[in-house]
Image (cartoon, rainbow, N blue to C red; front, top):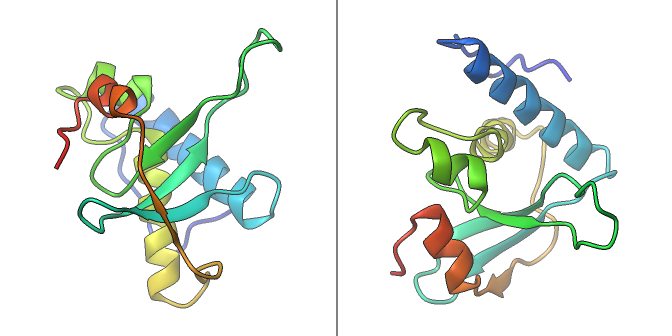
Length: 130
C-alpha cells in the first residue's frame, strides 16, 4: 500500500519500522485478511479500534488484541516506549485509517458496538480509566 495521504519523516530506524508496520496493518485490514473491530467505550464514548496483535509463537496461546485510538494503545510496545516514542505501529495505523477516511477512501463498517476493555489491559498500557 502506498500512502499518498501521509508521508512520515521517521527520526530513526525503529520509528521507520513502526511506520512500515502501520502501513502493513492498514493494508491487511483493508484487504480483509485481518479485520479490525470498530467500537466505542461505554464510559465516555471514545471511539476505538480493536486490532489483532501478532499471533504468538506458541499456538496454544491466544492471539492478543489491542484497544487503539489515535492517542493511545494497550500494546506492550506502547507501554514500554511511551516516554521515548510518540506512537506505536497500531496508533500510526489508526491515524493512517482516519486520514484515508477523511478523503473518502475508506468507510465505517456498519454500526459500532460499545466495547468495555479489560482494566488490566488499560493499566498495562498506562491508560487511566476515565
